[in-house]
Image 1 (tube, rainbow, N blue to C red):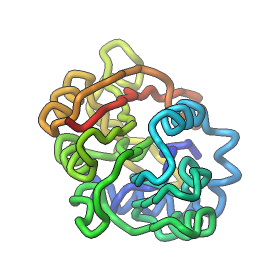
Image 2 (cartoon, rainbow, N blue to C red; image 1 turned 90 degrees about the vertical axis):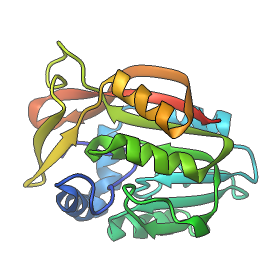
Image 3 (cartoon, helix red, strand yellow; image 1 turned 180 degrees about the vertical axis):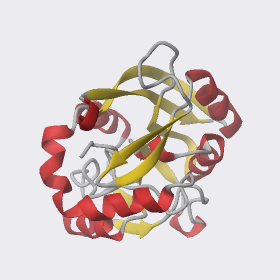
Image 4 (spheres, helix red, strand yellow; image 1 turned 135 degrees about the horizontal axis):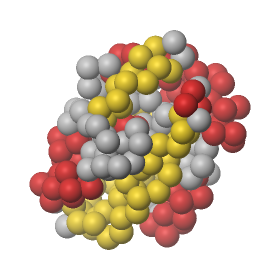
Amino acid sequence: MADETDGGAPGPDVGHGGSAVARVYGEIASAYEVLYPALHRYGDRVERFLADAVAPGMRVLDVGCGPALHTRGLDASVDVVGLDFAPEMLELAKRARPAGTWREHSYLEPVPEELGRFDVALAIGCLDFCDDLPRVLGHLAQALKPGGRMLFTVLERRPGLEAHEEATRQVRTADTDVTLHLWSSVETARALDGAGLSTGFYLHAPGWELLAEERTMWFGWWYVTRG
């Protein structure tokens, strides 16, 4: 099983295979904590971002939160809201941080207004299954306060990089076929402009491992701010 999201499962309608993705992450929820230490390769990068961006009393949105691996340990004064489609993952998040707010939600839909706006947002690994990046980034931008900061990742399409040359890629995970969506850095930058998000830092760096092929999939890491 590949570590196909760092934070958990996406929503029910993510691309044409969204229900399959949700089913996969529901099925592996009980084993996710065991798999995570062996498969995870980039938690320290997320932790550094949170250490720099989050201050006591802030509000943090964790998109594709899974079992709240990144946000469970934030200061008790921080208001954490996690969104995920798989209820099995949300149950783990509730146990890990009982004071948080954990809700089933698809990122193809706007973040519910009643949840308010946020100082900081994460979307790590979960956009791998997103077939409408401009739409989703628009939703996430609207959930941020002016000046709010976000770290997100997308699988990056790059000519000459094996397994990253096409816009979509089918992979088999837990006996289920899912579709990955890869976005060029130009496409992502254009989507950010449309969403009113400015890039502070960008990095092309390893993401999760596709164990069936003994291959590392590469992310575009985007550190952005809402104007």
